[in-house]
Amino acid sequence: MSVKEQIESFYRFANEQIEADDFDKSLDDLYHEWRSIHQTSAEFRENVAAIQEALDGMRNGDKGRPAEALVAELRERLENSEDR
Image (cartoon, rainbow, N blue to C red; front, top):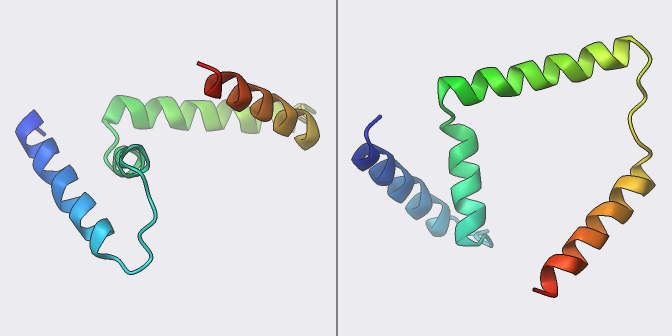
């Protein structure tokens, strides 16, 4: 898809979202949602590989991190990013 086609596609997508009754998204939110729908083949392969790696880890006993630790880390990152 050419850059012009991507811009036109995003424009159509954004307009559809804005016209929805429950619209409550930022421009960044719209772009990230559109990008998740319109991934390149390379991005898709990378995401599939990451998911496969996580599944393999789970099968081998990796239990990940406790949710509380992740939430605390995300809160800290958000607080630090707001200071900038």
